[in-house]
Amino acid sequence: MKVTVWNENLHEKTHPAVLENYPGGIHGYIANFLKCDDVEVRTATLDDEECGLTNEVLEDTDVLIWWGHMAHDKVPDEIVDRVQKAVLSGMGLIVLHSGHHSKIFRRLMGTTCNLKWRDDTKERIWTIKPNHPITAGVDETFVLEPEEMYGEGFDIPEPDEVIFLGWFNGGEVFRSGCTFTRGHGRIFYFQPGHETNKSFQNENVQKIIKNAVRWACPIKKNIELVCPHFMPLEK
Ligand code: ZN
Image (cartoon, helix red, strand yellow):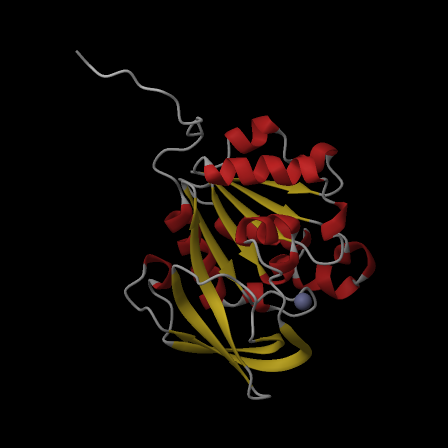
């Protein structure tokens, strides 16, 4: 299985806490805990030519992970077109935390993906689909502290499945783990992962991302998206 971890890699350059939490940047840290015998991982960032997401890279990617926050608008539309096409053709996509406002997520959802937010809160996550492949081995409930509050209403279309619910100590609730299907591609949105917190170090969070990569991995990818055309009757 081939995974590409994309990160805008900007907070890493200005907030020392990010590199302290995540040596090698968020992309490098996630790539490290994902790597294993049957999972090959590469990383790509905004600094790379074509954002590191060339046609060749996408054709060779089973699952793309996306972390972005302050520079969503710096990702050129032609790259977004390319990633969208890859998802519709079967590539899996995992969108983390502030990636909810990325161009690619909003494009695939077709809505604003707006939400409520506040910094530095305590979050309790509940696993509400214990028989789902993404929740395998994940605790029924676990706490992330501090984590950023993301609250409802979350302006997304109705998900295929809501598999995690988040509760915050301000009383807010959130659909913290949601799945979608677009074309032939599977999409998972997961809310934790603010850059100055340590949620990606959490064992449950790592298990969820590892499970999500396997769940989103296509049986067949690069499926040709043909226009409907006239088919003559068989004689
Ligand atoms: Zn954040």
